[in-house]
Image (cartoon, rainbow, N blue to C red; front, side, top):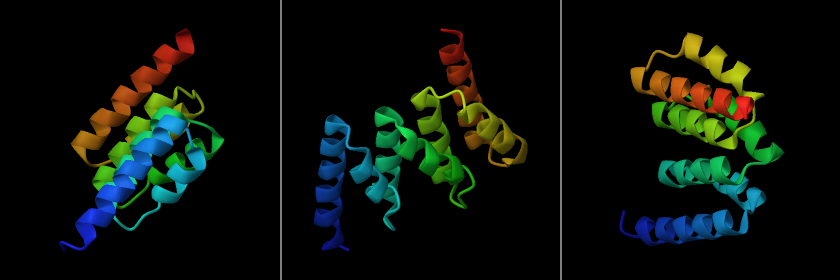
Length: 118
């Protein structure tokens, strides 16, 4: 367990640097990590950096078996401001059983509707 922590901390720093540099490709690599903390941090970063690659990874992540991953993907899609995400978020909202993820989906929909109106 202790051996893994320094590597995870190093990867988190790399993700933060990738966000600063707006390096979508590096974030995409980390977003498919087997380490959930790395994956969640990268997904959050994709929501900040954006781009077609981010959108294309985040949409299918709405169907992830992990509740936290679905929530992170929904939040990141809302942060992207890409109105194309509305249909996917709405579809997920109709299928989602977890109340915390439902709330994130609703928040993201509201955020995207606001971005659409501007």
